[in-house]
Amino acid sequence: MSKLNASFSIKEWSENDRPREKLIAKGKNVLTDAELVAILIGSGNREESAVGLSKRILASVNHEINALGKLSLKQLMSFKGIGEAKAITIVAGLELGRRRKDESVAKVSKITSSKDAFHLFQPIIGDLEHEEFWVLFLNNANDVIRKKQISVGGKTGTLVDARIVFKLALEYGATSLIIGHNHPSGSLRPSQSDKNLTQKLKAAGSTLDIKLLDHIVVTEDRYFSFADELIL
Image (tube, rainbow, N blue to C red):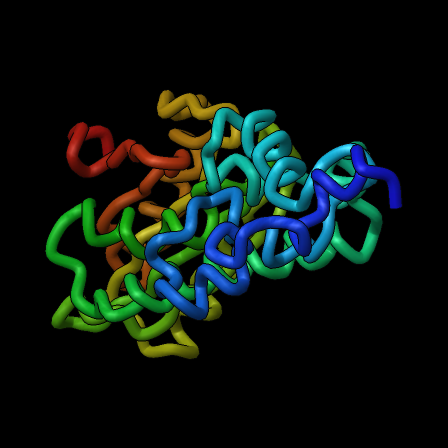
């Protein structure tokens, strides 16, 4: 190995600067985001260390972990030193983090406000690159019985069959429901089709005595509530 390449090898670093050894000696909380990603990928390329490569990848997404989690395998593999195996490891690691976050908010079992509903929907659909439509099925006490994906669409929309929604509501014994979908564009403004669907489900629910409590439009960190805006 040349002197130039050796300078980029983690093995040549001070033991305190090596991510794995640093984690063992000082704990996970002291590691930077780049060091954590470096542990996932294991090694860099001929010109840079795993940490250097990780810093470059993070810089491409403005050092935002949520944005990193949105990168596809193909996008990750565009970085020199990231092959399919390393890209898969990064994707899997970030997906575990997302699911951990999902579990932490899953403890919210009673809906008392639109914010509660947002906290249930956001970890599931908030950072997706395509639209998904989900439903929270509730009982008389506004406890969440089930949360269920109803449909998956593209970047600008998803189709929803009202018959499926209320078939499930009857199966679960739900007395009310909250619907939610995401806007990958980041816009919180509901479309006319969003409004039409809301009224359609509200009307269908009234005939079955199953009340539609709210429709939540979700983005990465914000939401729009039809009920809060008095347009339900």
